[in-house]
Image 1 (cartoon, rainbow, N blue to C red):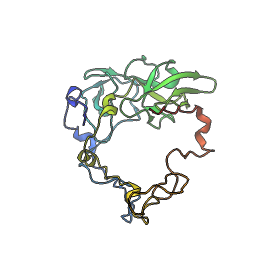
Image 2: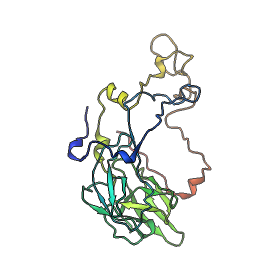
Image 3: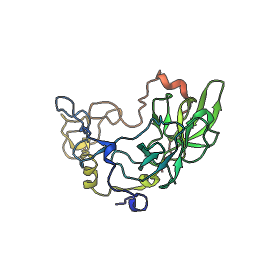
Image 4: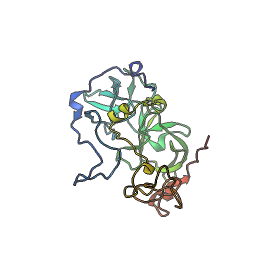
Length: 269
């Protein structure tokens, strides 16, 4: 078992009450109470923190007041105090500390935490909290340790080429906004839950092998003793669809035109 040493990063343990609200938990059931998404349910009670992903307070200086843990996301969050007195929760970037300032605007300095339009960001810069549609709020590179790299600016076509966390190179409208830097808590990917109890606290219920089920419950089930998958073309899901290594993306998906280079396959050890 391994954990992130939160004491080295967090400065506050209780959330700001004015920026929290109740939350209906997703337990993998539909309106009839039947399981539609497996392995969901239970878990520790959580309070939802309202995170600002739109950043519509422009040209107003803000200062980071605290760094906190958020049970709903892998990155660290923090309270940003704007110079007009308003407080908002934001996703904290790597290396930003309490007391550091940032600014959102079209003509801001390219430095850690600042946010501006993609067309103003030079090639080679790491960005996070990226908008796909101008004004719609951040959608890309929001989880712990992630970032995208600006690899090209096509001002004639009004698009910016970004290397995504998946290694895919994608065209994004350059009127969208993005923050400078990388998302905090990069050690999140190194953690190892170590025991079933920690998974249950996160709301993850047990995963049962298909081969351990009865034939009525799974395509791999049934048989005396341990059995293989038989003469099937490949392993299947509980619903009977092919799994592992099967392409699921639609050939004519609307966003195909935005992809410059597909993601690279990871080498098997």
